[in-house]
Image 1 (cartoon, rainbow, N blue to C red):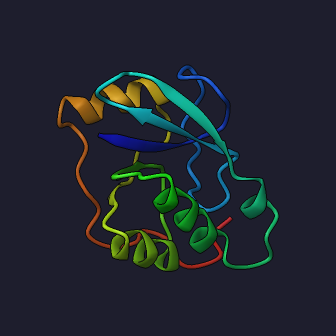
Image 2 (cartoon, rainbow, N blue to C red):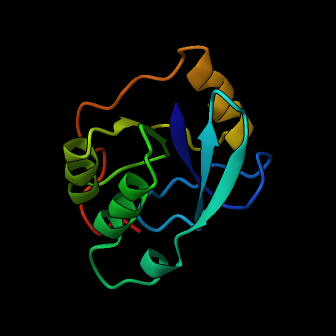
Length: 121
């Protein structure tokens, strides 16, 4: 399964970025091979609007099946949900590796709704 984690850095030891749409970057992790790649979020990082939608479209295009992040706004939530990507929020304060471990152990719950208003910075 391909999962994406919003990240403040480019390693598994990086902290989870609490923001989805304006995350510094994303770690695309394959749970079967345990390999990962870093995806830039530069196009959304400084966008005046639509950052979450653009980021969601990028992840959908890369075959992501789940997202782990700190928070997710309404437009991104809707776009991710429409693409069939499960959303796990509340992972801020963890490293990417810790978030992956919690995901694998079934300790993260899927979000049923966005947890911040639009344009959250």
